[in-house]
Image (cartoon, rainbow, N blue to C red):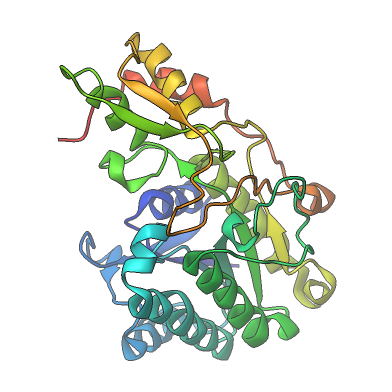
Length: 324
């Protein structure tokens, strides 16, 4: 039976790896993007354009002679940077909530199974609460987390009861990027290079805990989930609807910069560690570590690449150069 996946946000940091992983696993893989779209494999679609979403999903179903094994991975394009979300609250809500609801409705109407990518920022991250189980009560402290939670609720409301949609929460991601600014982890490479300049100084958070997870590992998990859920048919109704994936390696941003400096053999004299910023306009969680227990119970491999090992290899691929 044919297996097809349509990946929104396919030109982004995670979407590129998701598209590649499904393609390597024998799926017919297509996707959408906006500024970096490359038709015909990656269509130029604004996710806020309901007619465009309806049209492309209709074309996918016609191509497959209707309702074979079809998956839609809603990777993005969500506004994932909390500060940028606060700067454009209306745009954030339109993309993270309204567009998500329509995508869920469009997929559900056409019997297309939907996997929605969410975030660990749906939790408050207060000291002592982590690790969070998938069933833990969310309590986001930022607009970003609030809108992603609302997106989760929209997907589960529209698709969950029919067993046609699930949520996968992930933490901060890193991986091969077109620019370091695509990732809140990769961009720290620029900070390390910045302090090599004469008289340069950068302050870096050494309070909040992060669990950077590689996009290749997330993509692998998505392929595994798709295979398990699509063959389950009616049994999907009894399977978990909210799942979580994360690396177990823990760092602060300052510790990540230290690791990059070690790999690059660069000094870090111009960087100073800072504690909790109690005056921050956007509250930052302390620890939002996600439990992967439900994935393990499903038999999904939760192994993740070692952060330092991956970057040592990436150095030869120029991923540790500063962004121009």
